[in-house]
Image (cartoon, rainbow, N blue to C red):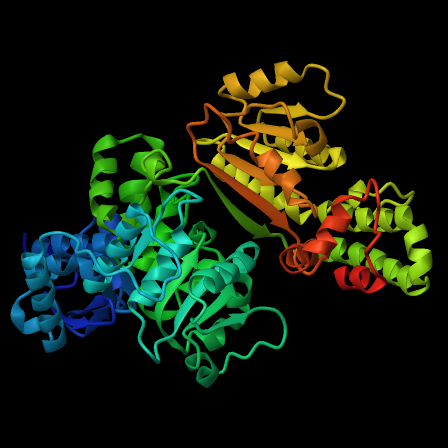
Length: 598
């Protein structure tokens, strides 16, 4: 039919004029595209909408409909599948360089992009296997074989200008692998950035000081932060938290980092969150994510993390959901799942405890810090001030006659670190607990694959945790000094696969238990006597244990707990005095010692 006959449909009589140019970015290619029908121009969003709606027609500004050429529809479909639309261009990761080479003539690819594609093709053609790199001499640790492989893999990604997700199980040493990688590629004047949950800030500082004490790092956290560009350049590494990053993003996005690492990167799994939007604004030569749980709820969890480390690899959020997340999660489509697995496989390294169990030590210990909420902190500060006032008002002589009162004061502060709900005072101060919040997050991550022991000195704390487990429908065993059917509870945990958690009071569970099914042990309220804690941890690591045991202490920062941990290292005599509170209580403990704890 002629246009006169079909013009009732108001089709535009002009042919589509489509011009493209491929340009090279830091770790992506930009396919800039201009489309016009006569004097009517359209943007890529309109084309994307038409293709999603499976139509060849796009609405133009003058009310007419433009007809897209059939050969271009297939091209556009491929663009949108592997890239993200940014204004009038499609941004695709450099890992898709073969697609660029196949789809475009040389004349539309600018010189930088041509050189980049040629360089990547050469590397790929010469690639035999991931090379072994030298362990940095300045690393104060011996890497296990699988950790060396992790270091080699991170270096391989860097060779191709790729990012990746280090997804080893919790406790396998992701932090030490990343520190070794920083040291292996150390260049003066290059600043790296590590973003962590607040709970792991202390742990990262300890690991840096232990394994790489010469790394000059700056902690961006709390008040009086200095985020001037010149100040950042003075440091090898910037350590900050997700919350601080959101607050400081306007300044941090101006700085070009060498490597950015997101620890516990499942924190950005929601692409609509402030965390995700903030980290996407950061600039770097390479991006690494580290997580023990790359997929927590659905395939879509992968999208946000991979779109950070490899922008453009998986295309747009909507397209990923349509092409992968829905078919895999809703319809269990194995063919699509395999296609996605092949696509992401080079950029994710995951080793489980079962795979590397022969290389692991008997047990690994780590610390997670739990920042108190405003309500909990207010109660703590109130009691601390009252206790300090009491200590300042008595003499050294009176102190040793009042050991019971001093012990009660210390115990109250420890209880508040767990939850103010544990206080036996008449007034109720609420049940806010940063430790329970952190513990439940950890249990949620571990419960499908691992069994967990939870120890506390306070039965009341175990009861608060029990309530949370019941709310989340997580089955548990429970053992305190009042439990008569001890063997029944032990067998329930050891033999029933549905029972994932065992709540145990330190007093009741310190001896006589053989809990070889447990792999993770949480010490909720660390006390001055490490021997008591080690005894509890050893409930899991016993004869017959085939699993590597990971022990985690939950510590409230800027509290009595943190001070005692520091004093354990520096003042062993003080620790000994505190251990024997039941006999010669506080015999050699001065008022200054007690005030320093506060």
